Length: 188
Image (cartoon, rainbow, N blue to C red; front, side, top):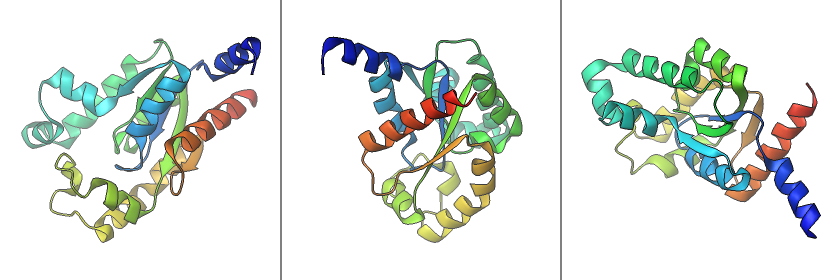
């Protein structure tokens, strides 16, 4: 590949809007957001980590002290604050799209990419985690499958693009995300 082709390729990878990665916990949002950020040169944001830093406490503590509603309000404010900022790759918390207002705000400033994985794969990825308050006391495939099924309609309704992460490496997933986001952009 000559220098001009490489420049064209890099230019094609640049984002002109945010990419919001959504999906159930453990589906690969953080890993793929990091890789996409490196591929595109866009800033990466971990919504949960941003909230932890802003609040000065862990998510489990936010939940126990203030409740889920308070946490969901923090998510909405964070998404709202992204309007007008340079395009970035955003790894959303697993429940961010459960609130319709969040979905509308995301669609105003970017594309929503739903990453999916089988419940067994999710379990394998999160079984040793202690910072998943929704799974506390319910760390098993059956509960994960049930919760995934409960959230599936909201995830699918929010998504502009759906990508399965099963049996793919991070490079393959991110290349597919960029290809489909760019293809989607061309349909406007």
